[in-house]
Image 1: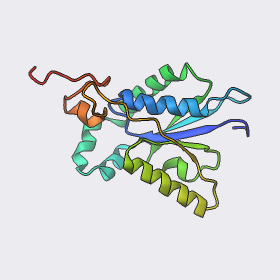
Image 2: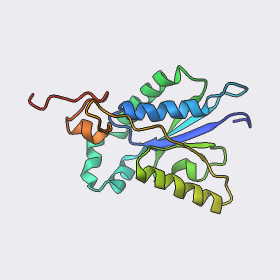
Image 3: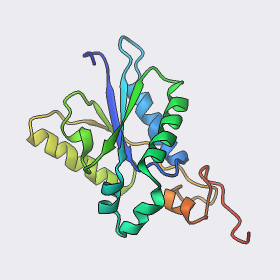
Length: 175
């Protein structure tokens, strides 16, 4: 990376990929893409299966995510599609800890965080830790929640529970 390139980072399980994830990914590409010299770069941390089991209230829920390789393939296909509209390149890395590359990489400029309170708190704590370790704080970019037809935010849990589809359409529970 050169000094004129911007790097944006984000992470998650990304399964199933839904319109809320797409909003985060677009925000990352928009943040990293440049009008001037340089192309920018997006680093997407994909949660490892082991980390998913550690961070879930019920470790069995991690089994619902599917195998890491399948999640990585689906995410790469989505990034290929979204990335066509931007100048930034991307890479997918496996997240094996909750802090990921945003905690230590000097070349990262921005963290893309969900509007959820937990994600915002983690972003604040991560920047506090970066400053304490002599690194500059990251810009925190937060797209708004994407809501389903029923006005409630889209989430992977709601999709897995059969309430909505990946685009936020309410599913008929009588079927």
